[in-house]
Image (cartoon, rainbow, N blue to C red; front, side, top):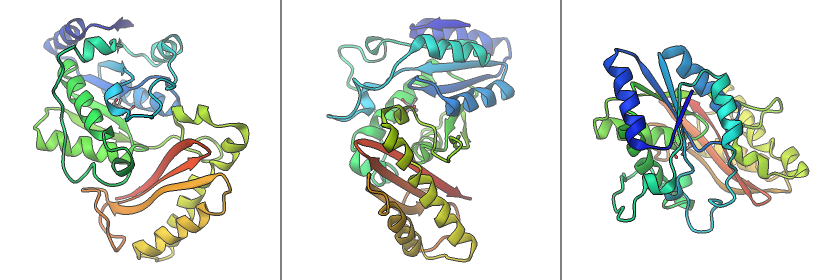
Length: 280
Ligand code: PAF
């Protein structure tokens, strides 16, 4: 397995694989890999001849006062996980390699980034779209793998690839959960023992919503109320948002029909966690 911090070297390697007729899969990450990332690597491994994992904590997607400095990093551990997962190349650039001193460019979009996480993290998706665009240019893979846990991010990247004519297939992969249902996330490491116990409320509230939908509830407001009520039973939970939107354009809907995203963001103590269900 190669590890490169160089844009030029990485691009040349991927180009030469493609010239040999090999299929290349990309798994973009910010590192501190967990089971969720491993499932993306496994899927990429199964569907491609070569797998590239990018590990880059992208400063552009963190707003002022967010956890950029505290964001967990462990390249040695990540490299081991990648090696075991059969990754061929890790792209691990320094910030200066990605954003030179005169960097002024960015990629943005209207509508999709405005609600849900975009409402409380106004610069976040602009940073995500910019870095993902750069990664797609540096690593011109055939397929790129993203987790459905970041459902709004997935919807935005799918839209961006269509709107801006990127020649890459976007694959959304299921959420990987702890045995008690908590969605795996690098941010779970911030939780104290008591917070970790109470964090199961996110998945539990979504489970109740899904049960109600299976039993015939179609009113989006009733589903939101059910989730909110359940979350409010948890003393350490503070709701950022509970939303029922179209998965295609991230706009609120009244009725559960078509592709639907039920998305929640909740502070457990000071840690902001997200979870969702996508109904297709
Ligand atoms: O989902 C993430 O880890 C990041 O937002 C991504 C897509 C790697 C861009 O920095």
